[in-house]
Image (cartoon, rainbow, N blue to C red; front, side):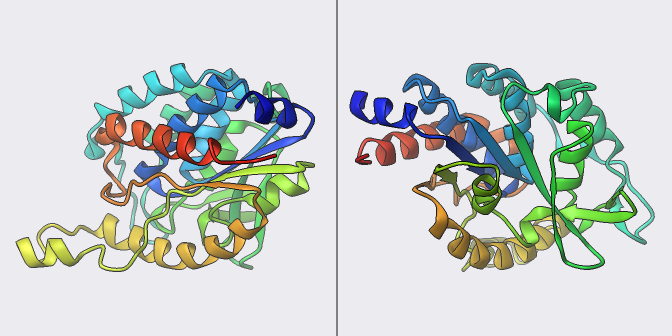
Length: 272
């Protein structure tokens, strides 16, 4: 570990935190291990839930505090975050989520962060990837988490932006473009095969809701893209959170240890 730590200090370390909804809480466990090893990323990029975790960490550089926040999230009920919109462009306006992001990120601009940070969104009109590195961090993150069909898109510079997981679910390429020469990627996307089998067998369709259906649709496509994007990473950490559903924010106490376990297992075998 000491030799690896010494080698890493000579490199520009980039951290790519992927999409995956509630499963992304496992990112915090990975950050805790990196901190314990004395490894501070010099740049971070995040997509969707990875943008939330990445932004807060880039602001505070404190994984323990992030863990405390996640425990607060565990007490949320999904219904508390809902502010229904007319179903013309999305089911949820996102104002309650924006208020939560503001509570953690305030009026912080990207230039104010302790570590350079970028979040990934998609122009829904053109399909073009949009990397956000300027302006208010909370607003950029809000665009990155705008799951199509669920959240109303975010308008920015004349564009309508949605969840970056559609084109870059684990933003390895973004971190590389930021200047990293050693990239640690964290992928929490589950294998989409058979996700709903148990629910169908046990409860008919009663255990499946529209949010899970829409998230599954995004994850089916994102999982295929993620495989290709991960090839550019030097280290890939994949916490086993396949049992966690997209809205299971109450399982933070399970997700974080899974992130710790995966990070310890992978980083202990890396030779640099």
